[in-house]
Picture 1 (cartoon, rainbow, N blue to C red):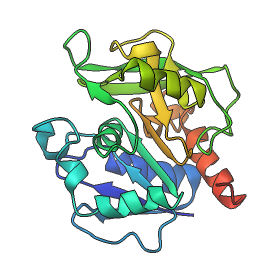
Picture 2 (tube, rainbow, N blue to C red):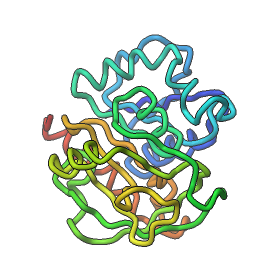
Picture 3 (tube, rainbow, N blue to C red):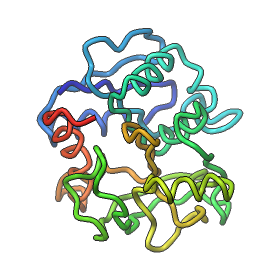
Length: 224
């Protein structure tokens, strides 16, 4: 399986994702510039965290208009795997590939610490290697990670089992403790925590590796 790690001006988690795929998953990964217009030859797309375009306007808003994003949208429309963490999650909501929005943390402060998440749905293409209703520990690092949606959208997310991760101790004020969601089709995942920063003991946790293993498992088995 070959992954594209899209790099934007201001990305700072791109190398983390590359390392997670190459050294953790032992699969292929390459950087792809935001200026490119093709993702031919790739099987999955990863949108990294960071501060794309300095977070001007809104976090992820300008990045969502980059040339490569037309290809990311095509990937999603074709049912291929698209994953966005932190700033990548913000991009996915700005593109409306995922519902809702990420707004300023409730305490109006940047938060950087490990958090405990509950696996809500392990029957997705990103979570099959996890056990449901268990907890994992992943780091967060964001100032605008407060997930918000209206009541109708929240009801839809619950009805369709699109809520994948919830915070055990909500650090940013996200509605319903939401830390990560998928689209209705199940091939696009956005989350604020960083699984790529939790793939080996040296980093303090290996709980993030199963997310990438799940992507590989479902791709190999032809799920989707």
